[in-house]
Image (tube, rainbow, N blue to C red; front, side, top):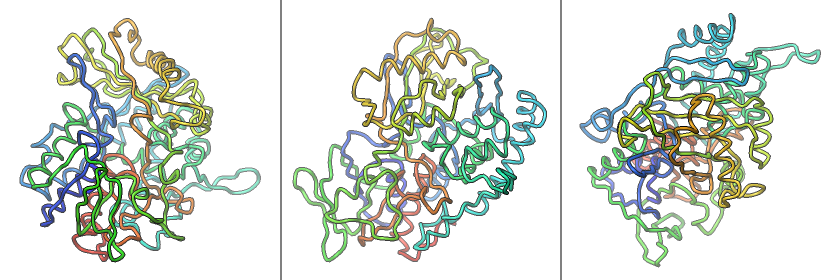
Length: 490
């Protein structure tokens, strides 16, 4: 197995339980992939995702691979309210966790009568899209006739536009035509942007993203998301998976027309009956992995055109107030301009900023300090912005800190120090797979054209994010154990 990301470890644990001998080669010094951690002076921060959605994916992994359930290995806490949203006009709303009625009521109270009803009706249509696409999009291997997912499952309302009936086909059009309220539109577009999607072009089926969060809830892993990675790693070790760190794979070895092992950078070769690649498989084979009719990687083989996440880790003096909300989202005053900048290769002047303030003693040195994380979706490194250069990094950290004052007014007075993480360090932000638009938002299948080679993780089916990575691990394990006839998880 190439790489020790979350998807790869999910596959490794399942394969080991099924009787396979599994060796994981990871070029870095640790496991977890994008689920990283930074520690300094008693402060601890997640450098990747900060919250867990669809925890059932990881509960299933722990049930299928051992006696100890997930909650016995990590502490899981529902975040309530799930999020607090602050808009440019000064209004704000706190949305309860996994309560549609509560969300409708909160939106009506904060944004005016009718706002909650419109959002609730939108969630109803999003539920229909979920029911129509959930299994082929998330729980089954990507089928050879993947074109069936090219049709958008979101039941958009028919509207009279420019003297003819039209239906919303993008996130931005849902916001403008169906929600018809600027702050509701900003709420929806903020969800899409946080997953690395351009609201102006992302299919209407992206309605699944707020639906999943608001239906199944947002969870915090005590100690941070890195604790989930630790628990999965330890489960792999308990199932006798071998990890070799500092081992860079330079080539996938082929024999008799199939993948037969890997060659390491030092020239050592390891034979294998199956090879599972967490990332970069295309660069490790001597020919094209994809043929006409296949779903190819988004943004090219290296994902160079995908946006990333700019993160500022803040060490603050002073205790975290009891009234503080775990997640606040400070919305950009111009979501359209923000998207145009991000996906046009520029830095947005007024970005949407997420503020995470976990109430967790394990993230701070004592009760008189607080660890806070700020993040925004930004353009990829390269082109007009070089995130390896200090010139754009420090000024943009100040932009995020300034925006965060809406949620944390005394942030500058309390600031001890900050650390920055950019896409140059954390890589691109692959979005979850979405149906619609002819399959443009799908990811390559887990089983490749090269027999014996499988793809796992955020850049393969069913896409990015911790939950989807876990799903990809289950799919790869199923394909190897049961063969090409595997029809998905039950």
